[in-house]
Image 1 (cartoon, rainbow, N blue to C red):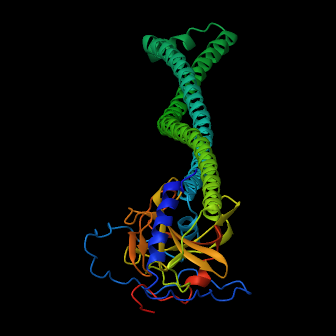
Image 2 (cartoon, one colour):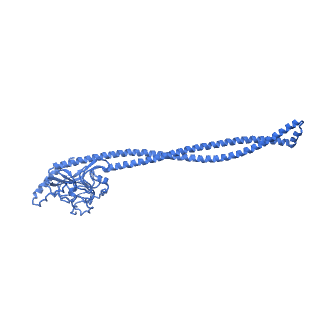
Image 3 (spheres, rainbow, N blue to C red):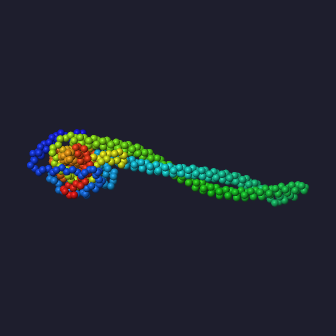
Length: 450
């Protein structure tokens, strides 16, 4: 993308001509170099600036900055990282990864519930089988005892018939008839035979009576056993019914748990795809950001500039704390290294201030940087010094406009590839980004407050 338009350069040249004509004005201050960078600068991760400063009275003709959310808590490395990576959709990726982790956790829980429900169903099935076996045994016992009672009833009926026959014969013959049987014998052998017949009849009657008594006792015992077995059968049948109901409930729970597992696995597949898509989009946006950052550097290096007005001694561009440093860092989730080309500041009082006096050479929309302003501060140690202020909520300056150090030039926003309201501040030397920290580490807040 070519967004340093030639007409902007022409406007700069015209402004430079006016500046040369004003030689009689105060002499520009000598350039000041940043602190020596022989050792890597120490970057306090979030406390590089004092607490938020209340805004001063708004300059005439300006609009108060819109309310914005505070940046993430500095103690959260993932939030600080997401805040600092320009244009990368780390929040979307982190959210996709979080959802994936949650769905995987839900899947694990669902599988545990399913395993528990399946085990309960297995237990219920075993209990039902046992209950059915006991029911079968109890039913067979009742049937067996009933057959025994039927046999005893038949025996008792036969015995009653025998006793009845004997009783009728005894009643019909009475004692006189029996006496006649004995007295009517003609010979001793006949008498003995008649006597033995009577004794046999009496023994038969006695045996029948004894058998009847035994049969009645057995019948009474069998009926008692039958009653107990029937009660047991009712109990076992109730238990079998309960076990069957428990089995049906357990199987329904297992089926529901299985459905949850299936549904969750579908969600897992969707979450995996969403995470992959978010990662790809994150990487693509990051590569686009790098490309546009490179183009900014190339165009700045090739552009023609007028004289600079900067001193080289910066003021902080925002009153908020630093939330993300310059440099490469490993993404804690995605696992690849990203380059952060600037220094990020939290919202503070919501305003953006010119780090040094200079000329606006760019003030426009950029897909990656959102509403972006670039200031030219002139030559410092033989190199062209420029600063960038990205993700502004709106644009308050125009190309060719001269600004003073500490001047209110914009409002902190979250435009372009941004994960939350913040100022992305860059320092470039001959178009190449460099660590801004040495330039602002000891710089005062806007307005001269240190």
